[in-house]
Length: 192
Image (cartoon, rainbow, N blue to C red; front, top):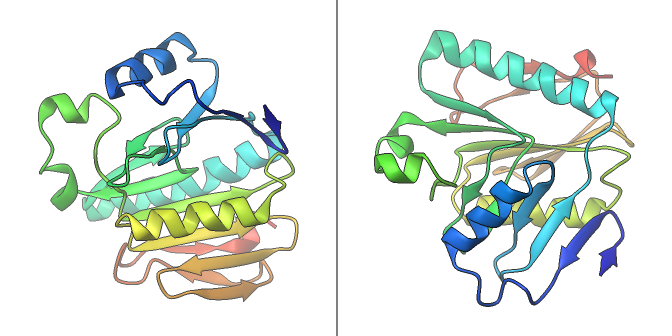
């Protein structure tokens, strides 16, 4: 069934094992696919060019911070993580500390790793019209172990910060990675 801004395929995953789901994703590499904690497959729309530009800017700054701090690994929106609740989710940008990464086996590292990123960024764009769904996804990240999350609402130029639960109004602010990504800051005017 087609639901607003995503395609949710209910029922077909009820009996799908993790390896069958991974095979399904590999057979459909041209799609952005997630799985919720109930086993439903969610096919996400491709992002428009402006959103892709914003993702690239944030990933680049996070990557450069990590290059000098050497604290973990940075991932893009094509990376799936298996969360403790059974969902397989992807963030627009994610950071996993070496402390979490090093606990995984080599086989786990080469799959949709069973690890929740320490820090995630999600971007609301014109292809992600449902703010309530994105907020629910941010809560899911936090409930599964993310310590900090930023939801950037490009429609209203607001940032929702999860972990401390606050709203930053306007894209004329500088965000801080707090203790999760210490020393990392991001100037929102770069994406305004």
